[in-house]
Amino acid sequence: MTIIMENIIQILKSGGTILYPTDTIWGIGCDATNIEAVNKIFDIKKREKNKSMIILVESEKRLQDLVDVPEMAWEIIDLSEKPVTIVYENPRGLPKELLAEDGSIGIRLVKNDFCKKLITKLNKPLVSTSANFSGEKSPLKFSDISSEILDLVDYAVEEDREKVSKYPGSSVIKIWNDNRIKVLRE
Image 1 (tube, rainbow, N blue to C red):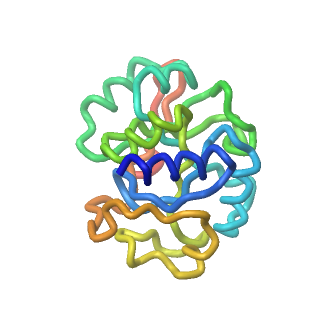
Image 2: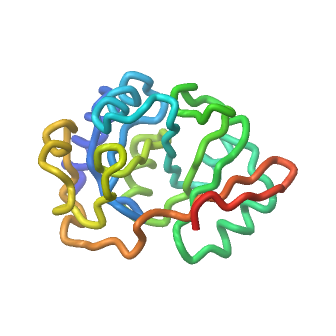
Image 3: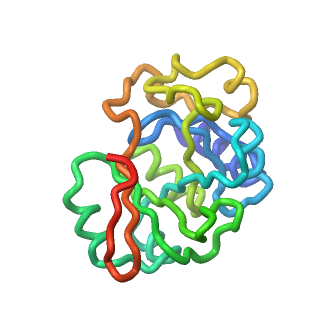
């Protein structure tokens, strides 16, 4: 596992893209701070550049390094049984290409052990977007991913290929710094 993990980290550090299991569906990911890699994902997905992507973090500390976390966000993270992506205002240290038009970013604090380990070893947030072409159905298991997508990424992680996700995506909730809330996806 360690040798394979080191290879994945090298791919990500060199601006590569990966297919990997998350705490929801299979995702296409890259180092969220590498703009060339982020643009590769937009190209792979045939996604419009004005549609933002979310990022994954493994720790409360990394989350706090990127955004000011309103108290309400902590409560939602603690109480949510389903994976939850929270859209925050005014992120720091992320390429503007990742952000929504209003400058916000969706971030999920992952509970999945593989993702936690991957992000910890990379020591950077990870882009996470569904492993499909824009507008197509999200893959609940590895075998749902099209061969075209497989050919376009630099590496497909071996972990959890037989597992079927119980979540077709995360809940998405926007929280403003003044604790106003809007549910974008249940």
